[in-house]
Amino acid sequence: MSTIAPAPTPATTGHGATRPARPRTLSAFRSGPFTYGLLVILSAIFMVPLVFVISIALASDTSVSSGQLTIFPRDWQFSNFVKIFQTSLPVGSFLLNSVIISLTSALGQVLSSSLVGYAFARLRAPGKKVLFFIVIATMMIPAQITMIPQFWIFSELGWVDTFLPLIVPQFFSNAFNIFLVRQFVTRIPYEMDEAAQIDGLGHFGIYTRLILPMMTPILIAIAIFTLTAMWGDFMGPLIYINSEDKMPLALGVQYLTSTSQELQTPPWNLIMVGSIFLSLPMIVIYYFGQKYMYEMNLSAGSAGVK
Image (tube, rainbow, N blue to C red; front, side, top):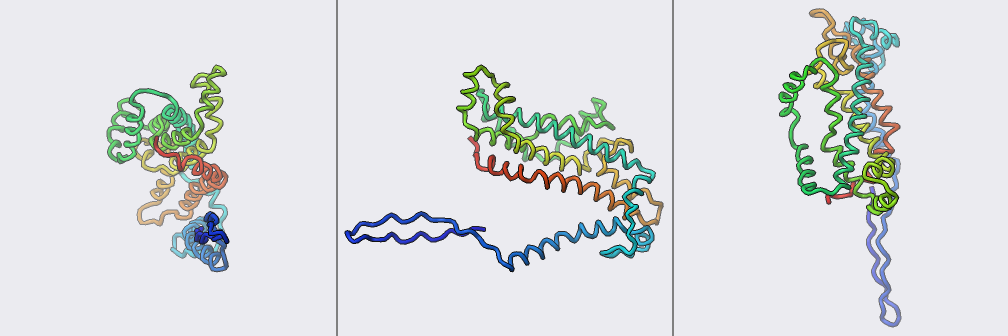
């Protein structure tokens, strides 16, 4: 947090002339013990759910069935991380399906968003601004409205119970990612394009050899957004996937709750292990990609709609 220091009063010389006042400066916020203590307390509060997830994941079957769950497990069962792959459900296939869907979707979003965003930022065509605002307006349409028409289209194409309804739409980008790329490219001086055209490059050459390498931060951020959304997507696979061997992990973890018999406690320890498999990869990806997201905010956050 920064505070703006008040401007000093202009000084008067002996001849009556007024010296120019020094410009206002930003004084840096210096944190003290109270700040660190408050951050530690808030971090501990936010970490409580994660601690319970890990605790239940390491609990024994006896503790789960009796409901005796504590912050620190009485019996540390690290074998639960192996036991989950020995259930009647193909958990290994769940993980592999999630990797395939997430990585392919991220690739589709990166390719399509960069192409469309570059076109809106650089190409000149009548009605381009109107079309861009129509694309942005689609962000106000709730996904629930298009859910039934999309299912009807994919059903007529014979794509139900395949990965195609989950992956193919990602190759047509979305309004938010197009807006991010367009704002990023708008900040790049157009003189660079003119210099490239003098060297004989067309629009596709300028896109691939000049603009695309400069879009690395924004494209990595889009890939992280897409990976996070598709890795934890539950509604899409629930609608389109019917076979167990094609389910992603987010849907497969829910099926673990229904593997127990009637009046029997679900295997919450294994379910929490599945939850860790869902959370840990995204935490790692965000940790290594956060610097690119920060660069994205610096580069595209203040471009404005032109």
